[in-house]
Amino acid sequence: MKFQVDQDYHIHSRLSPCSNDPEQIPENILAYAEKAGMKDIVLTDHFWDADVPTPLRIWGGFEVIEQSLPLPQGEHVRFHFGCECDMDRFSTVGLDRKNADKLDFIIVPINHLHFKERTIAADDFESADARRNAFVQRFWNLLQMNYPFHKMGLAHLTDGLVAGAMKDATFETHLEILDGISDEMFRKLFGRMAELGMGLELNVNTDRYEGENRERMLRPYRLARQCGCKFYTGSDAHHPSGFESGLRHMRQITEWLDLDEEDKFRPFG
Ligand SMILES: [Zn+2]
Ligand SMILES: [Zn+2]
Image 1 (cartoon, helix red, strand yellow):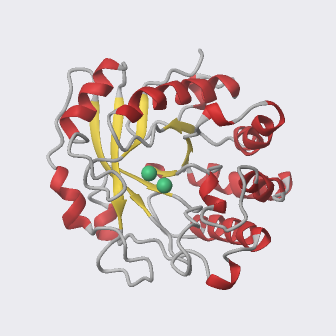
Image 2 (tube, rainbow, N blue to C red):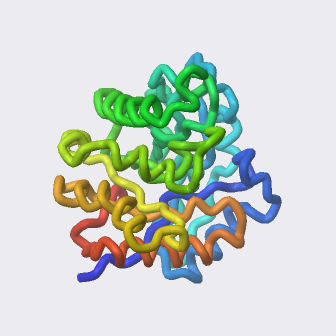
């Protein structure tokens, strides 16, 4: 059966500084999910554990994200408590095991490379090659860690943030960075990811990719599927207006990849 978009595992509330929208509250998020026919959704506010030292102390600790608890539950929708947990330039992930146990789901982006000195060294900031190396290294390092991967997802793998805030970057820069990673390297990474049982997020602004660029963006996902990785969809909505477009993009990319229900990541059974 064709992949049904009935999950949204990447949603921010007003508690994320990049949302800060008084309308973006759990009740409104749940109402959207009920209307959209979702089964499981996850709140993933930005988070950095207060006990983990880092140059990336820009996100709130557990005391900030837990303000959303208890999450309202829907008639048809299960609303899970998660976070978007970052990685700093030393490949440290801002998550202590004791807090990992309190979270239903954890997404980690390796490509938040728009934070100079926080996620990538200043000397490497303007170099696409250095950013590509950092992307691969961070990806690999994450997969060596001792985390509960069965309830974790890799956020927005092909996002433009891999080239974020570079002076001379164009729309194509992030694709050039991804193009330079061989099929063989991606297979090594995705093979390990499949072994660990970590999910791969589909969270792409599909309006921005046509023709050859679309294929360049889709290549890693096609390779991941060949390696046995499982996929989940995420809108990355920061405002109520983001839900509708998010739903459209989630449906579009699962169609482009021709995914089936067997390809779905199911951390909640
Ligand atoms: Zn992100
Ligand atoms: Zn996000």
